[in-house]
Length: 123
Length: 208
Image (tube, one colour):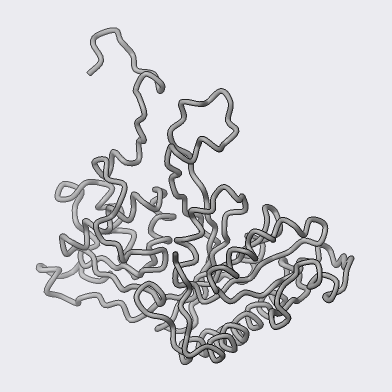
């Protein structure tokens, strides 16, 4: 702690990366299968900030309906790596369930590709 | 509201994820119209997600005077098309600058394919993207963005200059026009499916 009358400016504070303070310094999510288009949804969107950290409560609230990891990160305005750590924790604590997108564990089949093509044609 | 009215939220209506997501990439040099393209076809206002760059990568930044800086961010814009309740397509614009290559690995992992946007006034700015997708065996098509309808070269000349395989589609487009972008996405998906049929089976994008 800074003693009385001493002020920490950015440089003096050392190589701190503030967003990682939310994850207690962790930069990598324990779950490696979370990618940009993994869909997540809260099992308990209204968990109070007293039970989980406010940023965690914010993520739970944002993903009340299924959203991709990238959308959650954009909406809570935190870096992707930080959101992955938070989501990973929430999954382990059974507050969030997830579903991986095509590609991270298996490749899309022809049927899925055809559906994408048909969907674009109908736009 | 999924569970707010119950005394025991977990035991009430349990949310499920019916949908699965896929993604395509919109790539090309800085300022070539990637975000414009995403904006014109996305059903949502494009969102921006940011990733932190570690302190190691700041060494190559020319940021004289801020050497103590330990992190910077790279932004990616993306949009969404809900194909059906079971299928969501995400469109990710890749970061324009070459120094953000490390993000391309994450972006390209599992991608169905990519559109490489080219600007004939500075064609070389899309070479890096073409190299990347060729090496990873990610199917891609070239969209030549004709800014304001200006068409300086024909498709054959552009194909020649890009030195790409003859089966890779090259199309003229206008990234501001929704219909033009839809056509390009259709071309991409047809190409992805043709490439998939040619191989033994669907070829997943090579993450690494």
